[in-house]
Image 1 (spheres, one colour):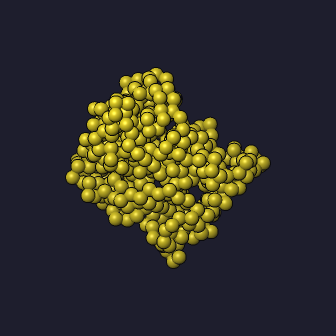
Image 2 (tube, rainbow, N blue to C red):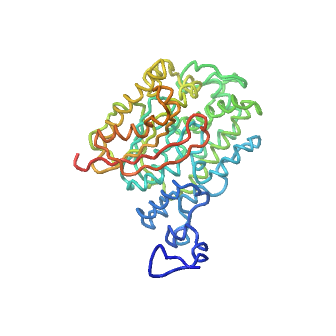
Image 3 (cartoon, one colour):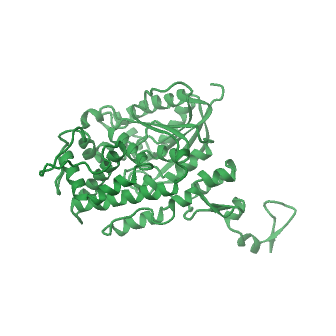
Amino acid sequence: MTVVNPISEAKPISIKEILSRNLQDILFPAQLKLVPQVNEVYELALAFFESQVLSDEEIQRNGAYFAEVNGQPTRHFLMCQGAPLRLAEHSSSRLKSFFKINQFKTGYDTNGLFPYRGKFHPQMIKALINVMGLKPGDTVLDPMMGSGTVLIEATLMGINSIGFDASPFCEFMTRAKIHGLRVPLKAIKAALDNFDSTFEYFCSTIGATETSVSTAKKKLLKKKKISATGKELLPYGFKKESVQNYLLLAFLDAKGYSERSQRKSFKEQFKAILERYYFVAEKIQTVLDGFQEELGEAKPRLGDARKMPLDDRSIDGIIFSPPYSFAIDYLENDAYHLKALGVDIDKLSNGMVGLRGRTQTAKYENYIQDMTRIISECSRVLKPGKLCSIVVGTNNNQLSNILKVRPEEVKGIDEQLIEIAQNHGLNLIRKIERQITGMANTMRLEFIVMLQKNPLT
């Protein structure tokens, strides 16, 4: 049996010939080989766009979905190969399986540190940076940076970045993860080799015991801490900000894990997680050896996306995800960490996008008002003709309850943001749907909304 060749009507081909070809052979040139685990439609779409937008050399250096170019491994493949994280022996089989399955998507380099809810898949962000046409030396903005994925990926790709977040913990976490790309490994190894002193130092500074942690009495590292024997508790390299931040993030990570699991004591948890942080820093720095000068400059800042201190038309691209305001209370999740940094949570919540308002209706109305201001700011700072990508989830059932209309009559958050964007000179050029895993009870779908600023504005 033969059918018309979809590529060339003049040459019929058999069913057998059609079925013998795989999708990769049809979509991509022979010199490109996909990484494992590319199994969703949105991933194939982004991989295809990368193959069309980037040269072979650019794919080898910064491609997100390819393992090889002309038989040579890509930098992304080298970052991801081998064990993604050195998980503790007592880690659950579910956690181990997650990082194995997502080895090329989310569990690589310092992106895999700290389990922050609702964070981006780094591989997806890397691809978006590519298909938006951003090149080394350009500047990308994330006005609501959360755990800092956009800034980390941009740094690795030689692209400069600026990020804002209203949460001091998000600003700190992003800074610490970026430090991990260059942090002196000898200092982290010394902290492990002298673990008892390291643990005592952070406990005395943050106010921790092996079973609980109280609100911080003083901000971390304001003054030197002395042990009961009179020995200064400053392990090798502690005077470097990058070392302080990286170790403190590991300490806060351990505390969060110890509250979720009672399998090991807090001290044992901290040691296991600190070993993981050292492993991750060593692995990514080994891949980057000889390329350190190519890294981009990242500037994480504490700030408000509704009013950013940036010049008009100064940004080459924007990628961000609005808070899932009706699905996740970020301040509740980060309560301990914010307190450890001396933050007044009640004061912070009064100005947070998605949290303003006493009722769900008021929160929704304030959310739309805030997002209008944020999109207006994005349009102001973006250069004409450049792209802004918004990754946004929606739940029409929740909106249906808030707006008192039937679910089929609800206009999704993605649709509303597109309308707002068009009113501010940002026109839709592509919308890609992807399913959300891990939040099925609150949100099932999210959309990658790609907008272009009017070249004449």
